Length: 523
Image (tube, rainbow, N blue to C red; front, side, top):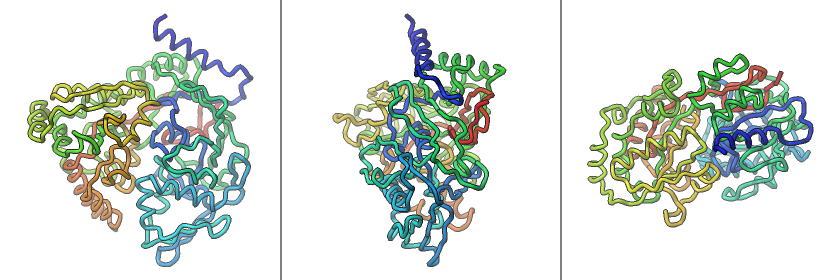
């Protein structure tokens, strides 16, 4: 049997399960990859984030304008010249086990998140004390005014989920698998089929906000469908056929060569809903040789052609991608082309070779982790690997599934202990719209995101940005920060793109943003 025929048969079997009668309103969704890890604080994987927004709620949520709005909180007051914040929870909220959501649950949840998230660590650094002063009031006593507190708690990626205190007390280096959450859907662990299916059901006890308009992660989160099934289909042709036949309702990341076919189908819409899009990168491990040497990282700047990467990821449809991309979201108020000539000047592998030799590369083995079941990352990885080989890198190109790559990325040990050297990644563009949330350009060292770059100069510039009071001052700092990033090279940008969804026309109410399942209706 051919591999594609086998996959099609397997997908059909998966789509037919379970044998019990299906609820009237079930949305079947094909995610970008299988859900390998469940805890959105334990990992920054975007598949886990999307899962987290089904299961958990936030204290604040971003609207379509990327402004934080009260979500689980009714509102807040600011006292003591900006150094005391009192957040009041909405009444009547429950966790999936029926227990009430209390301030102490939120305090424990925020405390766990602050220990590991880059922006959370900033909030933690200015917090004198965080406490539950009553069942509904959370109090922050700050060392200095921090007006971005709601923005931090409204982060849409690497976000702060609210969960019961008993679970929030789990150490950050231990994954939570008990999915008792605070969101509009419950995770049905008993129906999970590893590698192929995850199931969610509407939580009847969820209390949406009583006012406002649904807008990205803000406003009332109403679950109109009874059940959501995530069906993992690695083969793109199989997924496209299932969408066309109506066996599935929504495909998160259709491959670019299939977009014209899907657009022609009378019952399918193809739309890019995530306004910030995605931003690609080659991410180095700064803890192990050879990429602990900034000169070696800089050497590769002359070998990366963003046009090649974007064509590989999104095809020839140039309206979907941007190949003049630095470290901040193109088109945002703080986007800058400072120093971009290092990426837009003549490309030369010979220059890369010379710069590597001058930097002292001695043939050290480079372990390249490649998730083959994430098409965008696989495509970028193939181009990067070609560059590495042509300039003489001793490359160990390891092709794996995403579920194997993700836990390995947390390994800070050497290559002889399962560590890694480099991988291709993408981040939501929305987090790169400000240095406050652009965690992958941070220089936090071992306490930062996977790759662990350390740069006191970048951190000083970010601190200056946080204290800046005018847009002109912020823009100047961002230009200086990007210039420093070309020197330190926390990663190499490979471009930015808009990833369309493909979905059946009877799916309505879809909000802007990454896949969100509240407000969705199925006709």
